[in-house]
Image 1 (tube, rainbow, N blue to C red):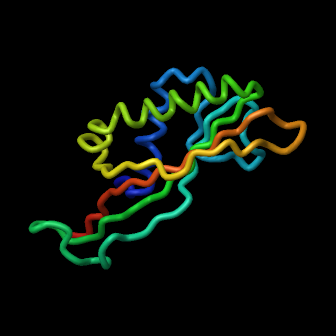
Image 2 (image 1 turned 90 degrees about the vertical axis):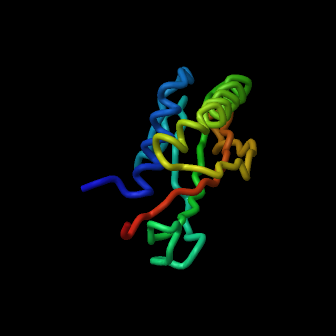
Length: 142
């Protein structure tokens, strides 16, 4: 079975962030037991279609242009280090826009949220939450 647009997006971002040498563990989803103390966690928050499903998205394709919102949480017990890792995450994503498009078919990447969230008392000193939107195709037929 081939990758779905959702799994393709998750794998693309996981690969790019894993290769970015962030200095912490990168997880492709939030574990049930919660995020490790020092980590970067990907979560696909939502998805929608840009055009009605099954319509022509190009002269030779029908399907849907899908828009996904991905949340990336950066956790660390030192606030300054958390900020540094968050900046590396941004640079890794925006530095690989051409790869996202050519290798994974992901385009129109925008950062829409960037906030210091903080964490529950006693767990971590710092958590930075960033949301990115991007677009990819779901091909139904050629």
